[in-house]
Image (cartoon, rainbow, N blue to C red):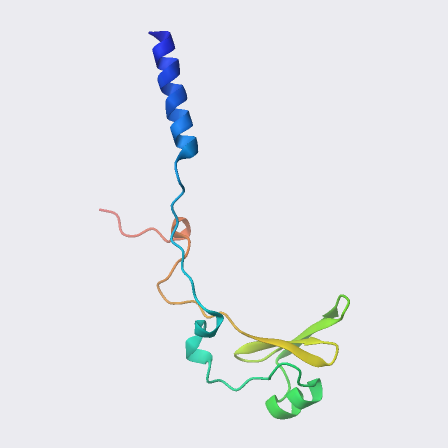
Length: 114
């Protein structure tokens, strides 16, 4: 009887180890992200700091430079502009949370109890 229980437990543990994990995969192209902000005028890659400043005004804040090559960032209302040396490396839209969406259900606020 004891051997039967050990075999049953061993089989259960082995089965759990080979169970496939399930996850939802959501694929979004980079162009479809922040689709509501795509019409916002922003600096293009390769543009100089002086051109960014004259076309978009002074940033809210400036960070850096950090590292080698030196990377710095300028914060504007809707996006961040990253510079390598004196040229725009990339522009990134700021994250805006979707109301009511919580990617981590374990962190969700407790609902009404019955």
